[in-house]
Image (tube, rainbow, N blue to C red; front, side, top):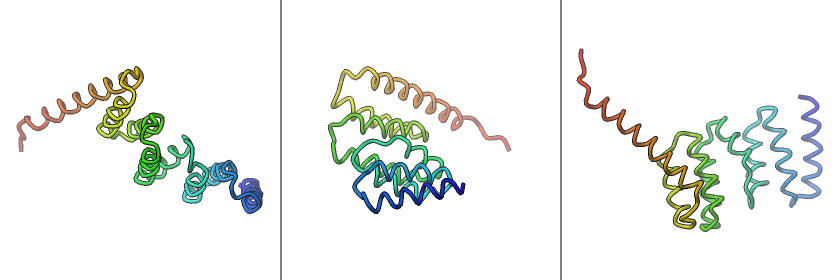
Length: 149
């Protein structure tokens, strides 16, 4: 832990000297996450990942129940470049990982508007649709069962 603190201080010095090098923020974010300083890690990931994809942040957000913040970042990337299917796919996988299958399915639909023959997304859509149908069946069964008291 003490060694990590020293490394963070080195990153601090480098960031002061070279504030536009995004990789420095990502490096420091990784160190912050190793010692459990997740808010600082998220802040650095936001700064470091501002203009390109950074998949590690998804894990930090999920582990620390920062779902709303993660969703906002993915949506912000999509809004900057609405025709980039990678941004939609990243958010779609994020939604799947947190159990938001309806939102993931909506992202599938958005991707297919841009790239209608995307085989990977067609498979995701099929799997998500089947999963949601199965969940609806179970919900309907529970609703129709009589309650005994």
